[in-house]
Length: 193
Image: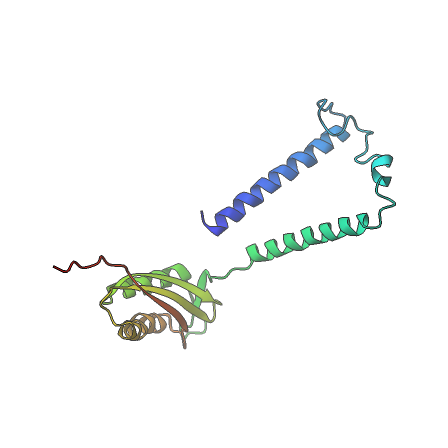
């Protein structure tokens, strides 16, 4: 499952649990009779009794610990929210058409075009292309899987000179920086007789 899918599932589960708990507390507060095993017995019941609230009053470590744990939980929730909302990949790229208006190119379309160009390159067995950066200044993160007999320097030169140059010219970009990772595909050992 992709990272976005995991985030959605965890968010949905946490949301449903909080909604169920909050809804049940609201229902009990409005007079709905709860089951016997429920935390609250009726609308006038309190969450913590006086004895439970004052049980740790003499312990100096209790309230600083509670506050520290809650602060860490809030910070983790904020970090998670920022991580979810921050997009690492631009969904679209602004292309200068020369008429002052500009056009929009889908990021996945540019990724697919670069991957198709890389796949046509001799010696490339497979590729993975990701668009990074901003929509006005995109960059490429590429992973090329090369055949065992291919010279990596020649493959890198061909990729930057053909696929990347073609993408940069087609999108009308002044520059298209790239990080390219090269790897060889495995091959079977040859038998010697």
